[in-house]
Length: 562
Image 1 (cartoon, helix red, strand yellow):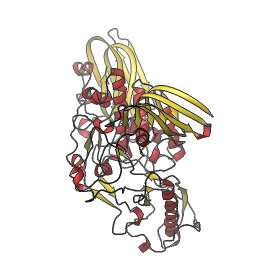
Image 2 (tube, rainbow, N blue to C red):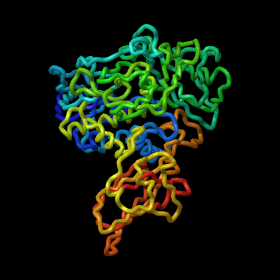
Image 3 (cartoon, rainbow, N blue to C red):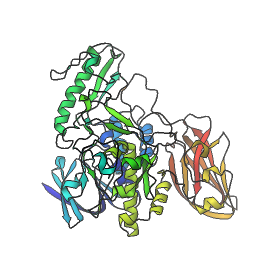
């Protein structure tokens, strides 16, 4: 056995989408980060071990951008065949690319040192390396989903469903209980060009008729989210018990589809089945503010809004698969979008504890909308950026300059509803051939410049002017109707690709007073949000689009100069 020790600015627990985005954002903003994750791959419920596609805010132009969109587009570029192991490597690459980020995989957080109301360090066990890791930090961000630091630190938390009267909500039961939404093991299928037989294991459940699966759609295009148990058990300590039950159900459902009735899967085979359940709900921290159903329904217009949600309040019945009275969930309507405040990510009673993901400070009812992974991702980016700002400015996290934080997030292409990004003075004061690309709004067709072959956008100055940075936001089609990864694999996959609207090739040209030309050429762009660092003194600078990934014209939201 050995022990390694680290001293850092931020320790992030949990490498799901919230923890990954939190760690990357903090590292990019200049602070040292250690990310502890108890699995061999990143992504949490989205990883190859669970394979839930990433959902987020509904509605036109509401797709989450920032780091989560960066990851999606990188995956479409590197992983055109949509292999889950490659998706894992895309997530891994994003973490490893950050020089300020130390990644500890296969490491379970098992102990914590607390003095008064402040965490001093956490201790993790890395089983494959027989190593203890002790991490001391200024801040600790628990993005583990299960809120592992709550029982280790004495941080206040909630579990189960509140009573209607607790927060004056209508969704909860009349009497509070310890029931939650359950967890699921998913399975994936692949189409072949020949008939495929299936023999189930002897221990699988039998569902011989469709009546054995009431209210449970089981066509081949399903992702089988409704194979869910555990909400009436303990969604932390009964995880293995849930897995055992879920596997019996999964094999039984596929046996039914293959061997009982015609379900159109004669040529399909079982490609993969998950042995790690994906969780929806367990412990939720109590923060400086508890977001309720009423906040959701009033759209969350908080002064300290830093992220947003917009999934319906999708409240699964605790009985899950064994709920037989109707559809296994109720979709209570929610505005799209609705805002989430920084305060719901800061512990009420532990001074340097914060959190992002499904374990933020929300009631059960509000959680049913805020828990999906794209929402968790932008919560993570907001928290990582906030912690970095607090450390860099020498302030407490709860006292950070919110206006500055909101500006920083929007500069990083992290959309905040009802807020307009402040454009740089250099962009604002120069002569420009297109006003749209400097209006501070980076989404919506009404804010998108569309050009044809030969069209350019140009800034002009009265004299040579120093330019050190360019900010570009291209159109990645935020209204595309496909997820980050598929739920099955037909012979011909027609979706899941780099959006046609994205500009692939472009050129930046600058000209100084003497006529000298500066050129920056990009041949293989595959991102929506791009920054270029340059050192030019020019009298004019222009963007020249060359090609896209399929469109006959060119789409651009922002071309800004600093």
